[in-house]
Image (cartoon, rainbow, N blue to C red; front, side):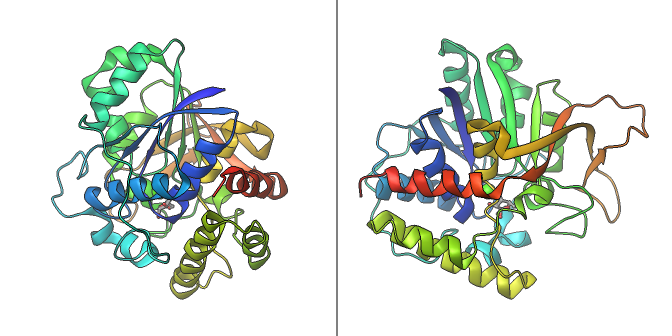
Length: 316
Ligand code: BDR
Ligand code: CA
């Protein structure tokens, strides 16, 4: 199995990414690290513990990371720019969660990532599904980890599309400087952006399939998706919500699920209307060398099969 660290900000789709990564035998989930994004760091961390508790994931350390972007905004990111509208006050609105039984590590997320990277027997893949703050701090402050990172497969960005501004996607927009640091690190990067995640729509048919699994966890996932459906409908008029974050995990499990193209990707840092945009040169019109594999096409049948069998594999 591919050893990974999932760096996330749960978040409805992050929750499903956790379940997929924990369940699928092709992945060895070494740690879950959390970052401020869809909600404050305290809430995204609590949500990671909630998800692990309901799924019975007790052997994966959870560590909390950065509470604000690299360039020092003190306000909780989700509260500023729309994470709350999409994921609710808790960051994971919909189901009722009891008190989480799974604890958070006393280690800081960046310290835990470093420790795992330096001690694991083979290079580890980083899978960020929130703002890139934790990963950027890791690369900036601990460059010795670079040879120990196999690749970075992230959810973020998009080509000519945005969901916070007309051209900026949430995870990149929350911390563009962090995204720039990651994209210019020289590491192998796969970018699963909105063009591909908007193909992962959790339709009624998908929810019905999930409900038929019949376990309490499946019911909880349907409740998550029901809330997610209502906000995506209200805000953007989507018929069904895109399950962004599990797409990055699915790409690692079965590369044929997500087709990619190499391209040069730059992060817009200064544009008056375009800060946080991913500027993707698919046609080689700049002299920039490709620095990422950019996801273009999702095999939706394969994707939903992965999600459904992941949820079904948990005993409760
Ligand atoms: C990304 O933003 C968050 O709302 C989701 O969890 C996902 O990571 C999509 O733009
Ligand atoms: Ca996320």
